[in-house]
Length: 285
Image (cartoon, rainbow, N blue to C red):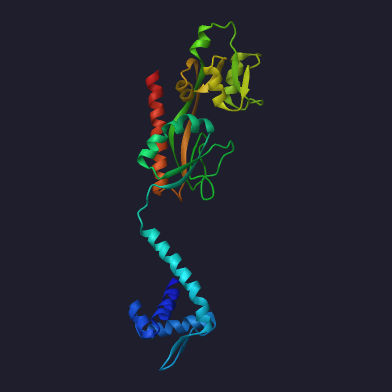
């Protein structure tokens, strides 16, 4: 049984005759009669009591009227939404590293909301890789290149790394550097191994699992740290040495969302923000 059957049933209920229902629906009276009979067969009971002088709903039909009207309401809403223009508004969940969210995206929120004030952005900065798709994030900005076939992605920038410190720290001319490092006991990260090759057996003054802590500590003059160029330069730090490490970062969405206006406007905003950060970085060189 489909929506057409429900619409036919309600037309007969509301007009009180097969003839008037046929006129309302643009059908022949014989077609309405045949389809009602087929519907009664599928439902296993009579819907209408018909005679030359009277037309009445059976108990089964009376029970079904509220359910049919609920289906009609849902279908009307479905059709109205399908015809409505796709607007850049609503909730968009964006998963990315907390440091990229706070240092790159949050300062650029005015650009997003000038274009799309109806966007409600949820920034998800969990350390684990948040899935992109129904039930997960709508958009992700990550340094891991996606492999899932249902994901659409593009490279929007690169994270370049270097050794950074504040001008005040360097002006103090320390005899030996104070090292600020990511907490990475197994030395899984390339930047950890690079720093250890320069620090030797020196114990870092500070270790943290959050890159933003290292940026703040370096800006306060507590030592030197391996940092992403875009974050270090925003903090006004001085580059002592550049690394060969370059990590592309990818803007990702799911094919189910890719054509939605709310998602497209966020994808464009992140792309523009990353490009602006790259331009600012190059102009500072």
